[in-house]
Amino acid sequence: MNTESHVYARVTRRFDASPERVFDAWLNPEMIGRWMFGPAIREEEVVKIAADARVGGTFSFVVRRQGVEIDHIGEYLEIDRPRRLVFTWAVAPTRSTALA
Image: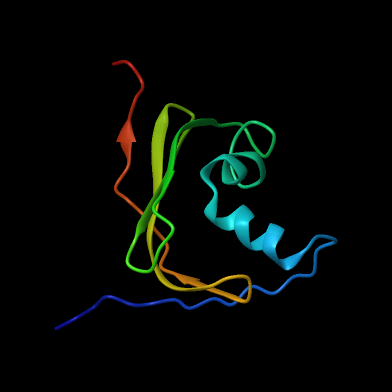
């Protein structure tokens, strides 16, 4: 019996920037670290941000919050720059980095 459930979300928002710039902000690791994660957004440290931005490629956005590393992971399913970006999103099991 499969008890796994899937959640689907569609996000739509208008920005005062070109579609290409907004699209690239989702795929460029340096840009992701500026607007999605880090101390400018919340109390956390960016540990590693990696993205293989191609269909079938994966991403990993690792941040440390209160001594716990959180790895946001996913796979790019569809990339149609600058119109459509489809990807999975999950949080990998956490690893504590606090000293015992």
